[in-house]
Image (cartoon, rainbow, N blue to C red; front, side):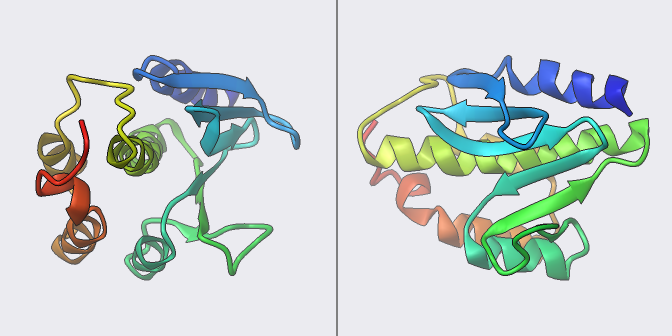
Length: 148
């Protein structure tokens, strides 16, 4: 499992604005503008932060589980059981990254000037109900009202 987790870390750390640090409970955390978007544990656990409504939809759609320690929080857990799970782990971390980058843009901070939210959402290829929820949740930034 370590090789798959290492590959996920290698991939995510290349995104603009992402910094990595040791996670306090082991593994590697991903930070954007000093705020954690998620972390990975070598045993194959990926935890990420998102809005509560999006979290509920991810769980309902079977795309993630409630957080393994804080099940009532806005955090979710994705379990990497094989190399085939790497793509979905990265996709979920990308969603957390998208949420953070758009929140920063609303505050006038742009960590990635080439970032195109609409294109990103299409590439994530979520089920239509989750895609609609994400677009609604992030609508202030997606409709041009964000400060860029």
